[in-house]
Length: 115
Image 1 (cartoon, one colour):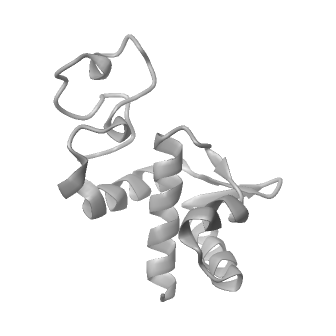
Image 2 (image 1 turned 180 degrees about the vertical axis):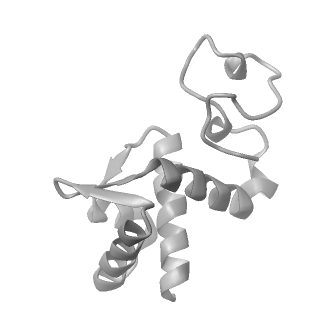
């Protein structure tokens, strides 16, 4: 897997984990439970994502920046839009928001995903 592919996989995984409420901050071990990328390649790709302003590192955990959320969301939707349908990734966690209503069709106005 080349560096660009590795970065794409990391962004998509971090976005999915965030959307599934598995964590806003992840470690390399958590990422590799799903991705199974060589440790050196994973570290290198994460450093590149930090350099691009898409990911931050604090106390040994990585998190998407606001820009990273938007970019990761775009990549996630590009990759999985054909199989997603209506997913939690297009809605927020506010139980009173319109996006939580049955039959809601679209992206939540407070979601960071831009369609």
